[in-house]
Length: 234
Image 1 (tube, helix red, strand yellow):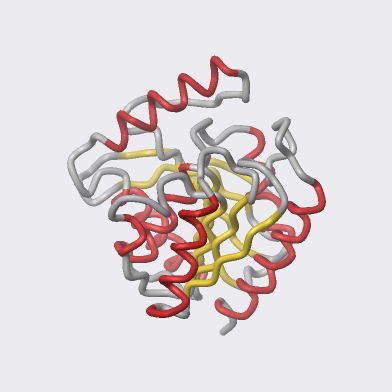
Image 2 (cartoon, rainbow, N blue to C red):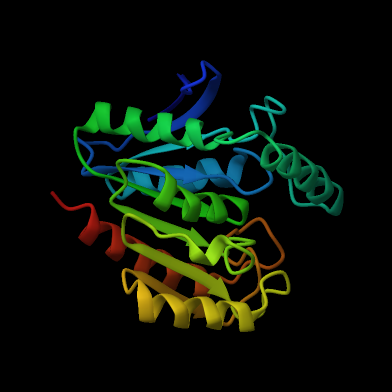
């Protein structure tokens, strides 16, 4: 069963959250963070897949602070619109959208009384990486090809929970040399951060994109489910 609720950030901002509920009592909860295309049909499908796996899944609208009701496709025009919206959200004064993500985590805890994980795709991957350090109450994080994670100050973040990172070896937007340095650095200093790469491009998990890679998506999803089952177990 799925529906949309309204949550409130620490500053009073109200925003919608797509909720997918499992058929039985949830084993735990996961926050699903959107790409730059909004909480569109793909993100809703992802949330439903985690509900089918027994999790309460919540997908907050992380564009809502700059534009409500965003639901884009994957055309070049949509990409340009999404990038512009992302830039506007990134330019918000701190903590910006992170307080909305925290509100979703808090709600998940209140509803399930159990552990909460977070996963995200593209920009959502970057946000899930940040959330692992900046948000409270997370027991696991799974960034998929988080743009910007491997450059600048982002690699220096110190996550407070175990993190499983998925990257595509053919991702033209996230150079593999930066991924390799990111993986090596964390293997030496923060072994709770694990990096796995796949013979695929950016967006390989999304079955609505030309870059979809069914084999890589299936393997990454299986690994994510195993990771969450371990880290979110009671």
